[in-house]
Amino acid sequence: MKKSQFIMVWFLPLVVIGGFFYPALGYFVIGSMVFMLALSVSRPRHWCWNLCPRGAFLDLWLSRVSLKKPVPGIFARQWFRWVIFVLAAGFLISRLARTGWDAAAIGLAFVMMCLVSTIIAIILGIATKPRAWCVMCPMGLLQEKAGKIKKK
Image (cartoon, rainbow, N blue to C red; front, top):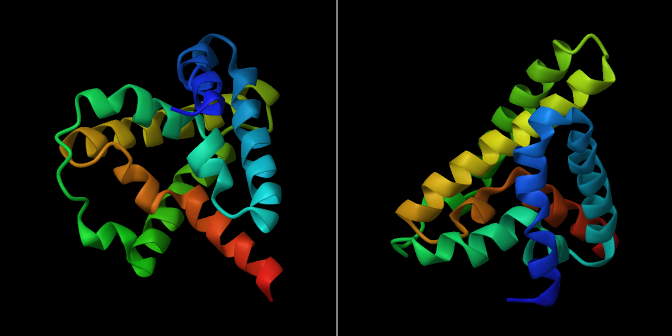
């Protein structure tokens, strides 16, 4: 385990549990997304393998209970990853549409997005390899696309 992962792993429970008591923690998710996308222009997927709190959780904790079976090949297909991206974006947009632009409700929408995707990651990680979610993660897909911007 990398030292950065050992530090970052604590942000996941802070957001997914603490966010229900202090919704402003959802803004950490927004900040992480912006930072991750900016970083990925010069270092694609660096966030995923070194700084992602969920990835650190999957490596540190879920790897202990994972069945470590092969990840279904469909998870890595571009069209499937885009479907997951659209579904995740739709879920987030629908949550944000109900906030009335209330700052706490916006933070809670991002906390919920983090919670739902973490639950999916845990289920997939137990049934297959710990980082199965990472293969189809919507933010990982965006990082890959942002990383290609620099190459053009």
